[in-house]
Image (cartoon, rainbow, N blue to C red; front, side, top):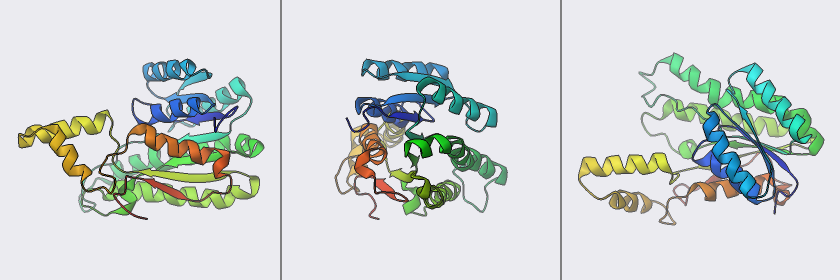
Length: 258
């Protein structure tokens, strides 16, 4: 019960990592505020939170909209009177195109959701987090650790998010607020399962072969699952990490060493 009596806000709640973060936080004892654009998904995850014996508040939110983000802050505080952790999990896939060819408007759009919206939410929640001596966790990516072709715009956004987290750690630390990042690699969830099935069909092999070939490039020979990444988020949100700030915890099964 690492988060017993705490309140955790999770943005970008969907069927994968966002759901796992919310549910694992509930199992650790937290009440949860769920934010995403799709209301039906929020209801599904809220049911899992309440099944774990904790309270859930759902707030349909487009975090790129100042008014919607402000309403999220107000609803969270009205419901629970405090916020202990903000998890900036919302994500928009940047264009997967070489930087020499990418449309700059698409790059800007990626920054709006992946970086500026995270800054907006953090600023809105800072007074509450300072009062609770709370924390922020940014969900980053293993794209930080490589420079493969077509991932340039993705890496630009996530590198900026890392710089944002580190700078906020310095700014908010004197107010008792910790800011850290979690950088997953592969996440064995629905979207990756679909992609591996697609690759397998193209090659005429079993999807398990694609999994095994990919897993062979990781030290642990296993692709991390959403709950395993969510547990790292719970740790950073908990008192066990009370002296940790400005750090990026890679959760990638040993794909990259940092």
